[in-house]
Image (cartoon, rainbow, N blue to C red; front, side, top):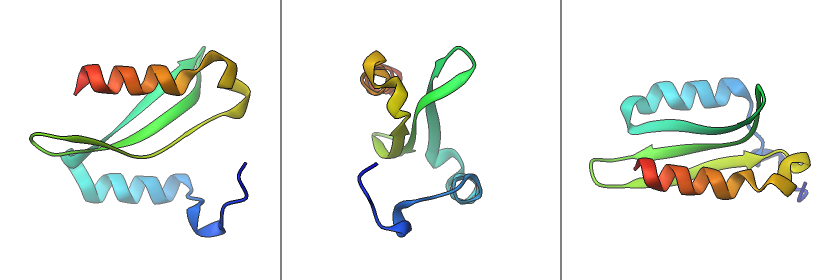
Length: 78
């Protein structure tokens, strides 16, 4: 959407490897519209902190503001 360099594009396999390497030090948070993930975020975790690392939102879902909901719910959960 913002013409980022190809190095910023990651596939499912990249995230699976990263999640496996991080184990309990990371989790994924998602917002669904029906059965479709419209916003997601990889959250890095320590004993005392949670850090929003990588995320994305389907542009067609922007009017629903799912990223705002995602951030709010991750903060509440953490």
